[in-house]
Length: 164
Image 1 (cartoon, rainbow, N blue to C red):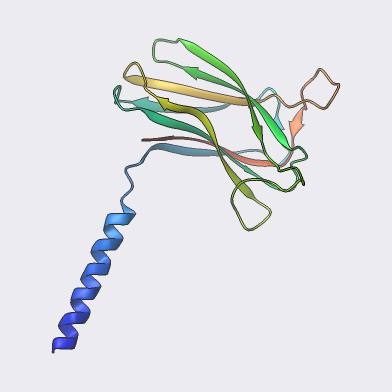
Image 2 (cartoon, rainbow, N blue to C red):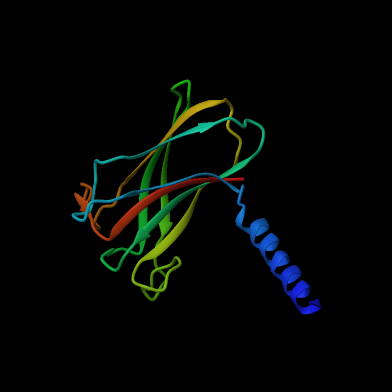
């Protein structure tokens, strides 16, 4: 009888521990959008709409990207737009390193698909409550060319996340 009670206590302890660590209030927003198999079209904005209720706590904003071996470049140029509820627009041009000097892709993952969590804004405090829109498009060009790559291959999913 004593062994059964000890096992029940241990099981109860494991269940409580699991519940504590499975609850994650760190992420306020997390969404992914798939890219067409033909590639990410140069003029196609990927758009994320989210609501902000907290105008006090600083948030970290991330662009999440999943790429495969079809991605031909060691870097990535993105143009982002953050549209505020009052229609104010903030545009940024960003560059991220996607591979190391030997050509191995950065990011996490054991298969050919790598997931990259790219910092967009650190400790951002949103000034007003309301609905925001985040748009992102690629700005990749081949060396010496003026026009963007029409279909950027190797990018499978684009995501956007907001964390406390």
